[in-house]
Image (cartoon, rainbow, N blue to C red):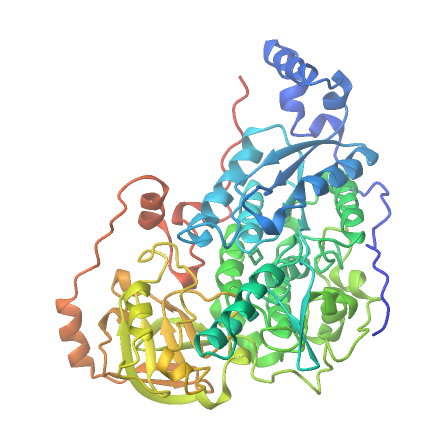
Amino acid sequence: MLAVTVTIDMPEQTPPPLRKLLSQLRSRRWFADTGMRGFAHRQRMQQMGLRRQDVMERPIIGIINTWSDLSPCHAHLRERAEAVKRGVLMAGGFPMELPAMSLGEVMVKPTTMLYRNFLAMEVEELLRSHPIDGVVLLAGCDKTTPGTLMGAISMGIPLLFCAAGPMLNDRLVKDGVTRQIGAGTHTRMFWDDYQAGAIDEAQWVALEARMTRSPGTCNTMGTASTMTSLVEALGLALPGSTSIPAMDAAHPRMATDCGERIVGMVWEDLTPQRLLTRGAFLNAAALQMALGGSTNAAVHLIAMARRAGVAFALNDLDAMGRRVPVLANLFPSGAGLMEDFHFAGGVPAMMRRIEAALSLGELTVTGRTLGENIASAEVLDDEVIRPLHRPVSANGALAVLRGNLAPEGAVMKASAADPRFFRHRGRALVFDSPGEMNLACADPALDVDENTVLVLRNGGPVGAPGMPEWGNLPIPKKLLARGVRDMVRVSDARMSGTHYGTCILHVSPESAVGGPLALVRSGDEIALDLEARSLTLCVSDDELDRRRAAWQPPARPVTRGYTRLHQEHVTQAHEGCDLDFLQGPATTPEPFIY
Ligand code: FES
């Protein structure tokens, strides 16, 4: 293994042409007011022991912190906030830490996706309602990355993303063979082994205590690592920052760099609207494919693009999937973990490798272009970041399927699926809820074989609600015992980025709003053709019309609070699952200061 020294390549903090004046800072509206209100604002800061000049003569930098005791991936973020503050102070700003909803992926029920937009609203309103000139976002566990970014993009002040970083790796030595163990992916693998009797209870219990060894995000190329990497590609994080392991001493140093740099960004008025172009989103799509990233990125990238007012859709992802092969040899598509990726050079090295597919002129948080940021990057381990002529998978990380079963599209992670199923036709076995499905799949008498197409509906943004990660439908126990580990599975739900299998996800429109998935019956045939990008319910149009006329929407048991707001306003998967009134580049006016 080659050694790598991580340094965040910071630009000189020379005054750029667009330098803001102190009098133009947003926070001046609060603190420079000469009336009674300005007096009260300054007075209350001095109540906390701050000096008058701390808030009068410096940009105020917000630090949005998604730490909580129920978010293990973010357990270190209180310390990292202190590191960010050091950087802000050294650069002449003044830091103010603001807590935001933590959204620990595993703990939050029914699903963090229900609350991604809630977090986005919270971040936007926190920034709008307070005297903040620029913001560092401390996040990383799955939905916290798009959630904080969507809110900050809509607010439109300079932002810099500071990723929580991946957790430490685990390893398993069995029969003299050492295997790397990562969070998420291996949980499902070992669960299947446990169900099939391949590992015993003592081994299962031992795994529980050791697979997640430290604070930090999941260490596979799951949703967390995919999204934080894509933030770098969008130009919203410092180059090389997002793969630094959470417990590496380089991580707090990187956090300090973030604090230092955001002050410069405020003076340069480097807002997300100046960085987030269509080219930036296409760069993120290219990286998504090279990484073999999570299918969840499809939903989050579209939601972020719509917040920025950028035209970007599923077709852009499919086109990039045909162009850029999977080069990252990382779980769940490959064999390594995030630390391997980091030592191989991380995102800058991967982007250098695929630079022919990139728009290198896009401006980034460094104040320089993407091309300038990655000019000196190099791949340090060709087994982890494979050369273009030796990809992990030439099939692309993400394909968009369409047909009478998914008129607005469905997604499939081809690189994590068994190629046997790339062209497949099988009998549907339909479930209306995960409870019904789990019960049936445990039944040894279930009428199912390895060619059956398992279907789960009512898993979409409105129906579930919140589009949970139910899409990795369990293999029926009787097939597990026969060694079956993959089948074709279709749903309007999402799948964890750490999971694998031939899972067709995000079927849109979803069943709960009358999408064709609602019309499938057990025994119908479903045909999948990856090359043709088609997903077909092999039932005549006349019969589908009859079923449609008889269809009744499912009941919505929750009638109050945020869930009701979500169900009434959430958009479909192909539109990013944002709330309809939050999409688009329009901003809410600045608050009246009284
Ligand atoms: Fe937090 Fe996977 S549970 S990143």
